Length: 60
Image 1 (cartoon, rainbow, N blue to C red):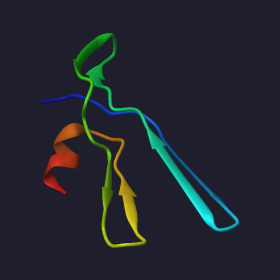
Image 2: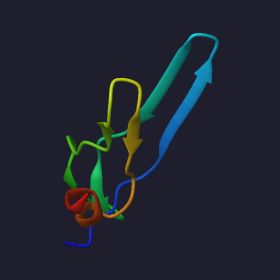
Image 3: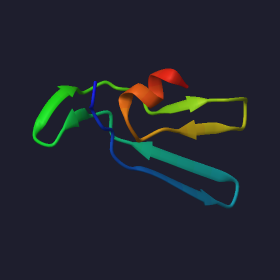
Image 4: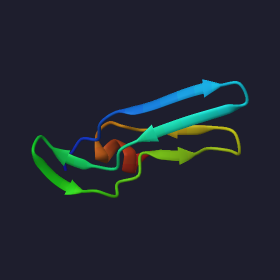
């Protein structure tokens, strides 16, 4: 599988945090999935965003 994710954006403010990512997975104009998760909880206060290759996301 050679499908790529895209961008993830995170912002922190006073007492708040926002993390956003699209759920599209595809290769150039070819869309394979529109519900591909890219942000995962590590703990209560720690999250990881993985926008790269789908195989890398699945491995981690």
